Length: 499
Image (cartoon, one colour):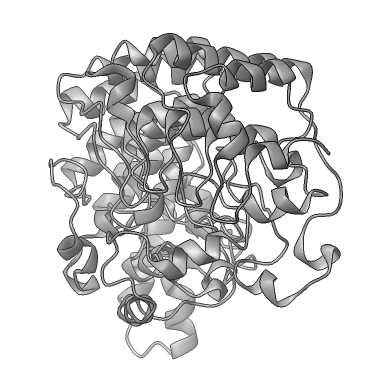
């Protein structure tokens, strides 16, 4: 066996002038393992020296196998472990683990601070705190409790419902979507990164090394005690706002998803503990948050639906959104009809959301705030729910409820630009509503928490097709609703109609 030549580290290899690109992180991503080996040996030798100054010790720590660059100081969450995984270099991963690197790939302080920004009832300042750490979880939870949120999974409070009436939130989550305004990358564990890039070998190496996966491999129901548990008692995986299964689906990594569900025993029903208002189970996540035109995502969705332990009717907590609600929001009749065949109980199983929305309500919702007839004061005061599944769309420049302190359109909204429905959008909506009418289980009289029927939303939408309005008015009780049904603001659909 020929001995490998000793690699001599260069000045470039040891260059530590860039805060977010340390020597060890760079070396972990290089195909030549000799560089990483030499750097780890250099670190071990230097660490054995006595009487190192504080500065020398600090500089040395940045060369170690667990020298992560994480948190609000840099707005990134990188580590040598994750660098090796993203480069698909399992040999380098083994070298790092052998040298003592944490298999989690992220420190507890960073992932904990990141996940505080997902707590229900947090201060709006936490939604933009990209450069400072948040207050501890216990303090944020206590502040939420003072707002009436006695536990993270309690029903929506009157204060939360009132806040919605002064904004334009999505039907499936809170006004301030967690992570929406943060100027930092997501805090993922090494296992989640391995799932994201589809590296089965690295995933297995991490699992064997003891990476925490306790939240993801057990079938545990959500309850208020688990959400309120003291942070010190949480395993690291419970602090993640995602999971390897979610990451594999989003990336269209079918082989990885199969490995997680079949070989590794991961749950197909996990809802992220740290993100109660957007705790989408994998099926809903695939439908609502992933690119369904991606062939890989399509394959993952089919595999998920065929899994024997999948709870197809599992809803999101708090807002109680069913997979069929998300499918309806796409205005894709083929997707909706196809998904319904997998649902025990069919369309009826969807029921209503935590906001009282039926499938017909969701089919009738405007896409965003730019699609309503806001020049009509009856519409402006009555419609406050968007159909969009895009978590990055921002209805107001300032987070809620801060936007309410300003009264000008320039400061409150995103401008006066409107987005009337196109002909294609009209036809897609008609097709979705037609699917629901053919089912026959929708009630045109049904009202949501603001007293709006589906006809209220249709009547207040820009460029709404008269054929669509007529189709719903012809339902049993439709004409009565059109003429007489008042919402909480005393407005009927007829009064809304017209610009």
